[in-house]
Image (tube, rainbow, N blue to C red; front, top):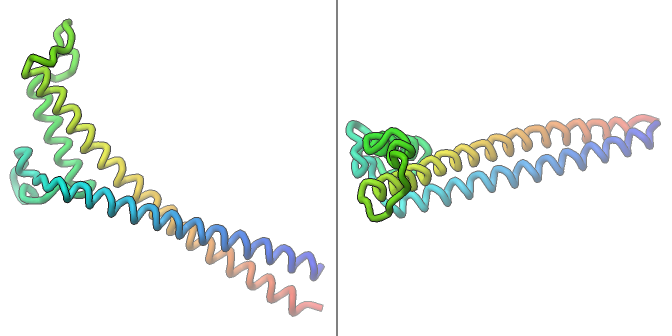
Length: 157
């Protein structure tokens, strides 16, 4: 029984170490990708006021999930003022890149998608960091259980 308990404790310690390492990797990836996204958005140096946002947030640079969401929603509103839907824009015809209205609508769709993709990306990095933090806690807990079992196995005759 003593040998089996030692082997079990070692397996548990290894699992705890694996969970700890994976947690650290998740947190690192989440933090590094969030910093990358923030840096790229800051380089663009676009303020919410450039999109027509007024109020307390108007002078903020689009550099995070909240400001990207506000900007995306604003661009979406502007796009809908051109045409409520893409089908309405085309009115049974097809896209004409020489038509300024069609071109403006297409550019708005691209910008809106970029901003919403940023919102989604910030959400994914947050999930990665949260999952990593949880893995670290679980890894430490499993490691502590493995250590206790190992000590008990050594103490028993």
